[in-house]
Image 1: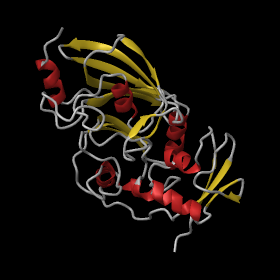
Image 2: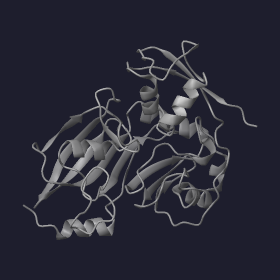
Image 3: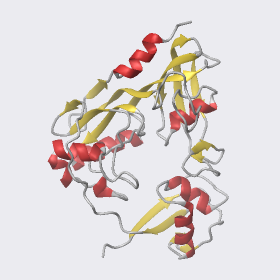
Image 4: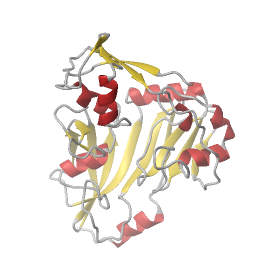
Length: 309
């Protein structure tokens, strides 16, 4: 049997409850799973057992004994891919909307990873730290299922480490396009609002004073009647960050039924959010590289038909 995984985490902020803090740090684990781990003394602070309502202070050393990581390697599937660039170190894909990035509960096949394994069999040899390691070979970052656009995949362990460092250091430039309802009060600005798990709906995220820092830059590219096209830049990469921040701004993404309106007049069956440009340093040469993916035909057609102000 695979051994349990021991994870050491130093708290970077205070929190009134340990279980709330861990829920934000480990979104793949449910609140009930975390509570059970705490009750089984598999979560320690300073090597001492704690309770779910124990307070967390900055600098606290938290130790978790987690279940064994999944070891199933996804199967290769012949799924068409739009490859923007590839070499011996990395792959850049223009991901279509509707394609899940990697296998997870509810999506065990038909993902980007399944498609990549068919085209790049060497990815099956990749491993990376953390839970579900072998189900995410080479995955450096993610896009939501209904977000289209650029995503980079590492082909070697070295490239994976180098790219992960750049994302962690926030030196990767990620630019998105979003069509939103209404018009922001300013033509450009920065949304600096911390985000965390929504306490009522655990699958959603929300602005929270005790959440993780999150900063989103926006600039209006075009004003339309009832809509605006925004260029979005991310300083941080929190789950659903753009969608939550734009909803907080009062300009939710068109087609976003989770954080915006349930119906839209434009006939969209996805949200209008596209990862447009991606810039970083090549993991082997350290030279700056930049990639761009235009809007797909359905999204471009919507913009063409919208009346401008």
